[in-house]
Length: 131
Image (tube, rainbow, N blue to C red; front, side):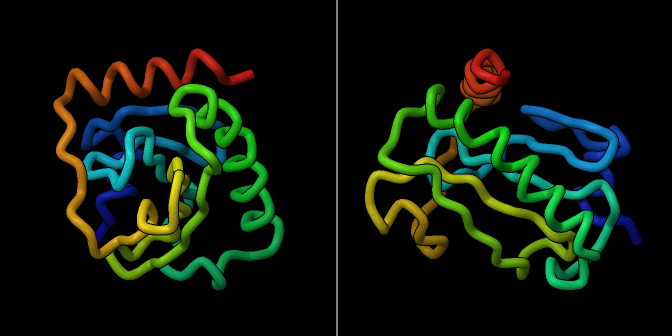
């Protein structure tokens, strides 16, 4: 059965897209830890990040690296944190999270609940800084 991320890739579930190419997709997390929390995924459904072949894995990181500066400009913070957990969705993904302190990347704390309008505005702002 396809994961929720595969359904997003296939257009069966909408998302707030940040960037896309033939191999990768970046979109906003709808239950973010911080404004701008972005998920970066390979389009191939692979459960565990360390099962991804080297070329696709390095491409995933390089794709995320293109998103991070735009995210930093759109959602100012001290850093853009990177996290790979892989427990909640069986489709490898990288979290890009604007950080000002260590607690900003604590996945056990309560998530934000932005409105669709807020997510749309955030995605537009991030995309406006993509090169």
